[in-house]
Length: 268
Image (tube, rainbow, N blue to C red; front, side, top):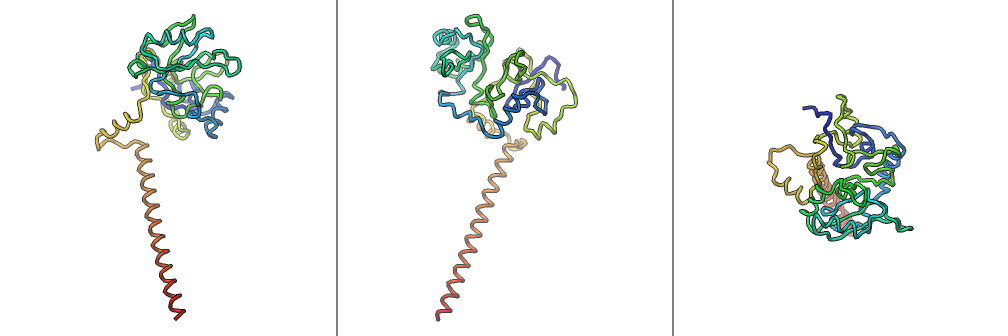
């Protein structure tokens, strides 16, 4: 069934070209920021695990954006505490001036409270600013590239570098029928899927252990995923490598044995 034009979908992995596309089907970059993000992606310039300040459990950490520069840690903690017990919080500040950069990370004591805040705190107003909340994409979204390197999500129209696929600006359902599926596949860009209403709460990433549990309970006849096939191929290659190694070792051992025999005969 074709999606309705009012439906949207959200990015599950981050690809700079897709993030720059209003319907998630572009196959070429259309601004300089995307080119910068592609360079960061291909060269490994950005390491999402390299932030020493990114502490706590990412599955219980809420990203809070579009904060007023006047909002303090105390105010933000007071507001977020309405949704549950706050374990830790980091209001990101400029390294030189110490001024707020307008976003923060709030870790909750448990996932139930985090989920409550994720669902209820989006678009509330704090100190005159309508905020956005999202999950911690920096640590949980595969391929993530931050805004400072041309990536990120959201953005302002004035900059001309909008990024789509996030909670603030989801992808719109494609209007065209000839989606370039082969080109998207070659670039590693997921096809548009999982359409939903703009007013539904976007799904959250699951813990890896939960994903493994679901895969373990999967019926045996269920079709294998691409990841399953890659895992089996890697295992087969390792086993073949071991067999070849044992074969070479046995052959070298036989050659050394024959060499010693010939040497012994020559001495006699």
